[in-house]
Amino acid sequence: MATGPLSRFKVIDLTRVRSGPTCVRQLADWGADVIQIEAPEGMEGADGGFGGARHGPDFQNLHRNKRSLTLDLKSPDGIAVLKQLVAQADVVVENFRPDVKRRLGIDYEALSAINPRLVYGSISGFGQSGPYAGRPGFDQIAQGMGGLMSITGLPGQGPVRVGIPIADLTAGIFCAMGILIALLEREESGQGQWVQSSLLEAQIAMLDFQAARWLVSREVPGQAGNDHPTGIPTGVFRTKDGLMNLAATGKIIFTRFCEAVGARHILDNPDYATAPLRSQNRVALNREIGEVLASRTTAEWVALLNEAGVPSGPINSIDEVFADEQVRHLGIATPVHHPALGEIELVGQAVRLSRTPSRLRTAAREKGEDSAEILRELGFDAARIEALRQARVI
Image (cartoon, rainbow, N blue to C red; front, top):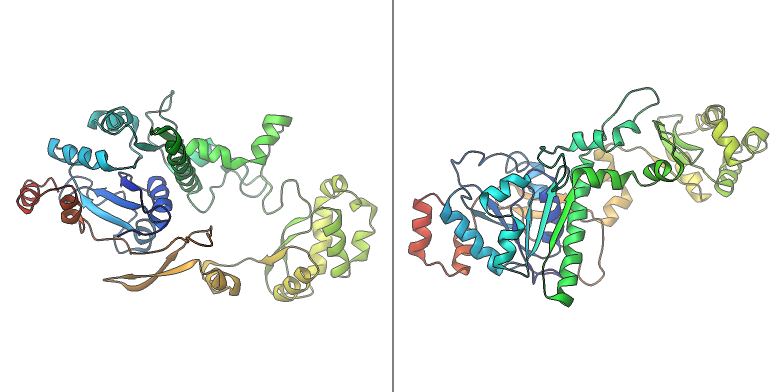
């Protein structure tokens, strides 16, 4: 039984790949009763689109805290079962292309007619309407079309993708936020509504100040590499034993930095006296800072600079991230038991509630593990469940 601040909500998860499962994971981790719909064994596409091997790290991280129901949505009986579920549900989340859900008869208009209180979340590549609505969506395509690749990488390097599927992830998180807003509004109106997000819109929203530079000032940002495009000096610097990040932007922090590292000659140089001058003379300034930082190890500089109130830190590999003492203190690597894998750790939530925290209640379930239980909750008896199984509807 689901527990947590969202435990009163039932969510039907029709999603595939990453953006949709990311959205639903946000709801599941806070206690929503999530029913994940999967194709029965042997159906076309039954083994694809969910994040790799079922016992692999990606699948486990995406699909924890859900119950699994196999259901053939291409059969009338399968659609009938789904509609019975929808009649009792609070939320449906899907990321089909617009034409697919209409062909199946599970679009917002069809399902809201069954349950007017239904909050229906949709994630697409480019939106539910418009000239690109029918195109298949993929994270890297959105990164390119949304401008992110044009500002990522070293100057002159050419476009570079970000190392995570950021359009997928943020579209899912935005959609989850929209669903929660719609559920709150439903308390006032008594009505559900259609919540829409897309990879393209999410990617553009994440451009944030880089987008505003164009919209407000008509400035087209370019690649700045490891240097911050506007906050200088901020970047990657070589130390005695490796590399580190430094953010010494703004007069106060720049002064603290120069004094902490004993670089009065940098602070007193008129070429670096103001933010516009530091930007104009970025290359020379970075070279002088690099000469100073090469004299000590990363750990020494990070300790000294943070003590002085200057933001700095190491550049960790992923294993080093989870070995970091602060990361261990925060507990974002969250343990959960899997019947076959034993004790594993997954990535927890990045937001904390003091009274009603998120929980990893279960690892990802086996395919169809909960089918009989879910159907019994709908009032199906054993004979009817077995008939659906024999017909390969479940």
